[in-house]
Length: 564
Image 1: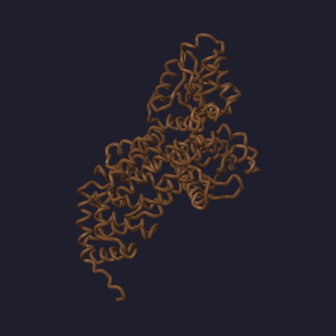
Image 2: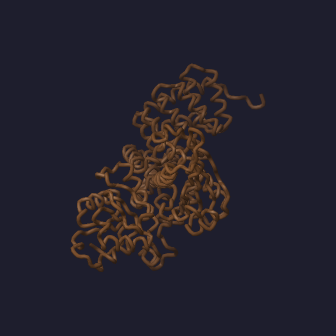
Image 3: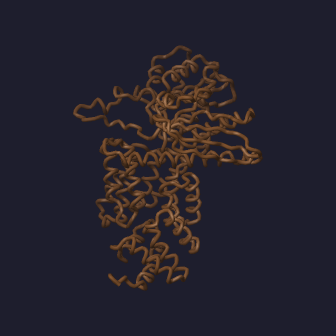
């Protein structure tokens, strides 16, 4: 074993060697580097090599079992990790943990057999990624080789600028002891769900449990935990219903940014608890995204890399047209200039370049090559980040690498079933490969995970395209009309509605849709529309069908005479 910095130090009892091996293999499969060695565990003395690895690891995964809780070795490793705030414990068999660790959030993986898609395992990986991404106790300028390089104007260590959130213990207002268990479970499941989404840094439950009876000064709590946002919640019984109330608070000023009630019948609660967690997490994620985007757009300068990415995404979402791209590219370039090793910055820039290449870049191969280069760089920097994978998938697809795009989109969803961007990317790729019903399933998941999200009109428009591919033109038209309710001048939905109406034989309404399209973009031409369809994620035969239908409607629609 070398002395270089590892992502994970694996602490376990010698009797649990086979289980520890399964964990080590699982972590390495996800791209982590793991320090563990059974050969150094023959005695109960604190070996210098182990101590060095333990102190430098970004996350210390302690495997609690009936034998490990009795081991002074494992207890010592857990104590040091807890002191360094790198402790990420897991239960591998039922046991009573040492009393000092009873209040530390511990995932029960006693039934985990090594399945990479297991939901509990995926949730645990989210906890580990937070520690590894934050750098644990070892991430400092002194330990970074890039900071020590001569001639470098600023550190190139990637900072995690994502918004940070602490979920405070939910209050049980029912007086029923069973609701205490439900309230604690809600917090635990929300932490897991939001962590898997990738857009938020979520503080571990062990850091917030001390505030169970002391939440009077939210600003002090925010400062203590170093977070931008706090989520408060309570549960109480209202007749035959259990009501969960949640509110999002800005930590530095205590302002309530969002509040909502969620009701579930008590008789169905066991079956609906998972859906409730997803619904609460979805609303919360959308609200944080809105606030973060507004802040980034209003900020005059001195952006963080995260803020530059948010601006690039917002610019694209608010300006989708046949010539989209240049402003998003400029903002994404700022992100990688600010932090050259920022994976999400490279992925966002790759996606923006690919959109421009597809829609407005004149099909210049140099733009596609640059987009693919940034996509590859993002994969090197963060091969297991769901948000990175979804943007890389879109970039690769629009640059023509459709099979790689499908692979990375599927991987994004596999790694984070709660990633709305992953479901969006996968849906697009499934349309490309003539699987419209599978695409609609993922678009439905997106709308659940990001209810009323700022970019949902794009997903609704994509749902219309999937219905069109399946020959369901009425459903396709309904989706286009719904998309236009949220974005009245969304020109893709305008041109699509003309096509759907043409397929339905509603010719005058189709011509009116063309007139609306021309009014939204006076400079648009038939060639613009046909190029956009041919260059999009549609398979060639679908693009040809759309173009033939649109051309007929366009040619039947007389141009307005100026001054008439």
